[in-house]
Length: 444
Image (cartoon, rainbow, N blue to C red):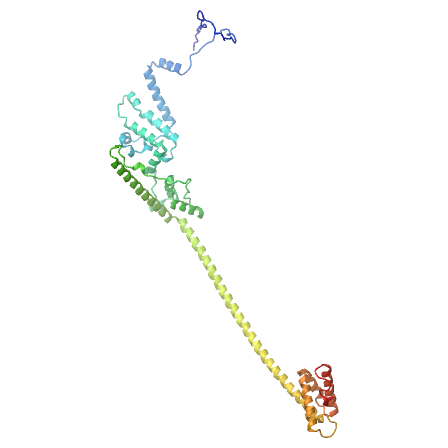
């Protein structure tokens, strides 16, 4: 590009100029230099483009606007791009409540998931395509009804409150529950999961538990169904309210419509809660995991029941065995006691008989020994005295001593021998303290 030299001398001070009183020069101007200045910038480029293509200002602006639209459309072609329905382009802007705001902006595939940035970009794209000024510049004098639809859709979707009201009644975002036939062809959880993902957009609590798959844990499945059976929804139905007239003179009619709208909202809220509850019931009824968990719980319960019954049976058997053993031991003890008693009785009888026999031996010994007289006939008094002393000695000895004494006296016939044995026994009893000295006089 050729350069041009331009001479720009410094301005000359006017005549009569004088500096102010407090003016103080801080320096001097540097010497002038010659520099080459080239034409650059958007305005020069626009001028060069017009000269090159022989366009007027209006022609160049129109063509540039068309190119900008095409650039914007190309930038959003991948993310925000969907064909426009010809019937939608003919919508009446007054029926804005009946329009699909996401479809108007080309955001049907995003819907409630669309971000604010996506909404703004979609709005810019639609405005560049359907702006009335652009259509007029292109010679198209159609009505701007659809442009108003675009503006209304943008207004609602960029307002958080209004957008939530529209999302509450956006049936296009709902996912119908699968039928039994569909479940048989495809996976149960694969078909049901999108249903709860769509319903989960109304939850006040986020994130929403997932349905999971066949291998989900019991705790996760229980958490999922507990969440949905206690679902806390923010869904409202104000968007479907009947319009309240702005006529201040008819306030009674306004209050009537407001009451009517409130009742309609409550009814729709109740119906929606019932619908959601039935939806969860249907999913629960066909969930094989619940059947598996119940079967496992039943098996575990039965196992505990069997264990309890077995423990009770064993306890009864142990008790019966212990009772039988106790009865056996008792019987054995009784038999042993009976035998012992019989033996004791027998022994006692034998001892008693032996004692009687020994006593007879003792009494016979004095008789055979002539009642301890060496010669002559004993007098009755002598006999009584000897027999009394025999009874006295026998009362002081036990059966063993009695038997020992009888053994010593057995076979003795001589009075002196008999008296000696009796005297020895009396002496022993006296020494043992069982007899007093001189008690058995006939034997000493």
